[in-house]
Length: 146
Image (cartoon, rainbow, N blue to C red):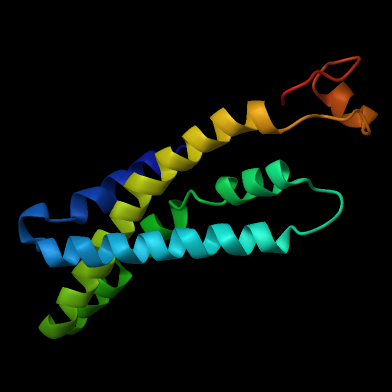
């Protein structure tokens, strides 16, 4: 919790918005959209079990949308390595990867948080099967809309 703001701040500061081309933004957004859609579908399909209904499966898929920590940590590695080795042709690729990683964080983290907070209270119910979970939350009986 302590290091995350510094990690995201330094990654965001590394993006030079004046050097970003419009085509690079469009390609990055397309990659993010394809990745998020594929991740959503894969999560929805993997949770095909009798114990989950459609709303619970869709909620889990939405909960897997946020992408931030890995992108923030690894987004600039290609750029840093290209600069260290003096490979200017790869610096462009590294800048594109870093830019896409930053946009992935900017788009998916708030979107995922909104979806989780909004859909969780509407689509999920606690059925009272786990008394230890109730005790953990200081409750004596389940409430609806977790």
